[in-house]
Image (cartoon, rainbow, N blue to C red; front, top):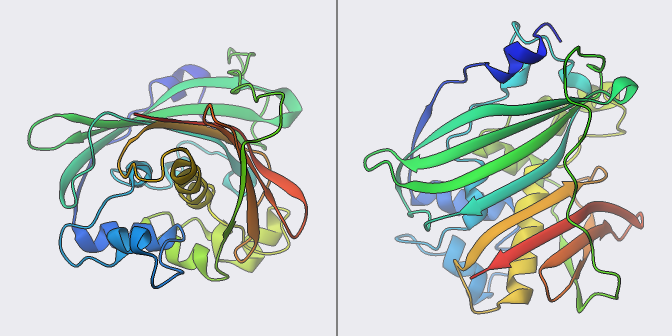
Length: 282
């Protein structure tokens, strides 16, 4: 890492103006797993309407995306060993089915974990370009496993959502497709970790892994349907922690509690990959 703690906090990322259409909205929904059942009317409302499709609120994480900015030469991060640790989203207004939005991303804090690396907290505001209306705010934590030991960085990580003690109220399964990472990357995240076997192996994985934000959308949508089956567009916020890698084609078993808490494990490996999740509906 070439930048200091102070330089990272003041690192200026450009505003990203993004014009998008109904086609982009449908592509996002397909990329997070909707449409596998061609007669599912709920899914078809997001992927089957040529005009004015419903918009998944989780699309806020890909709109106004500044790109894989941590690989910039002046930053000097070890991006091969970088992992997405946490993701959050708060929705203030429904995302229009088409239009132009502006994303502004900034570094909020950096926490040094020594040999475990750095935790980099960032935040993005998503506004309507024409009116300035705040649509959503997203937050992310990235684990820079090769960049520990930064002077003057913080030492205390943010606490995760506390999970309930009792058993879940529902357990549901969700399937991913073998080519899902290749589809999801068309939203704008072209990190080769998700498509290049050699890059994945260099990072310690046997094959390319699924984007964390892909599983974020898939799992969040599954949880929202359990909490409020008829409440399309009623999601207000969601946050979760990525606790392990997931590979395209695997099946998730998702535990959901009535208070909105959730976690997910891969059925084939009996491995928890998402934990400390909580989703709020209106």
